Image (tube, rainbow, N blue to C red; front, side, top):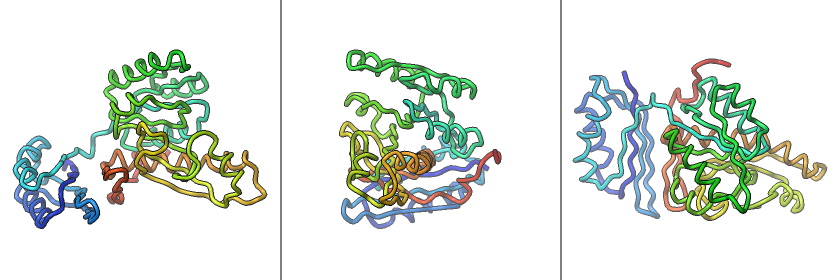
Length: 294
């Protein structure tokens, strides 16, 4: 049986869950997992519901039949085929730990993605990427050619029909135009526990402040640098005896793990934008399993 998930974002009111459950039951669908959140501050209701179509009903038929219910409750609702992988373009500079981690998770099927291209402003990881049979594109970026470079990047994204762009320690600031065009479809990993230590050299900033915790933050990219809605965060302890270079080394594992968890949440349709924040639902049972062990 095909597994689907329904994502819903609408004004909060009585009867939403009952209406959805009744519709799916009438169509021969069995609900296997459900998460919901009623935000009393914004007055918005969010839901992610997994289900199987026991009668073999196709996605298009489920969506078409649900139109009236969605209209009644003023829902932004989408039905997703959980077996469908999302096409991803990764952008990287000279730090390769996040890229390496994502390539491994992609290879064993731990993330529901197809990496359709890797873009870099350097050649450091060309051989690694090509050895994975993934197209590699070097696009140098300078102050003088930034507009042309981004046009090339966006052409690759469009031609690959990518659903998501991942900045895996890509150390260039994207233009406002690119951020707006790809709103909600670019995920960045920032090597700091935001909102502290934004911008360049956050580990150095943290070292100079004598912090006892350093972290990483994965967020959607917006035109405001390091201000995008946060998807995932984590931390690691440091001491007075460690150097700024130690912070960099200790932070690598945190960065890779946080970025992977953010991509997992996004590609499993667990993330909902809620103003300048996000609603992130727990993973469904079985969604962390891999196609193969290694």
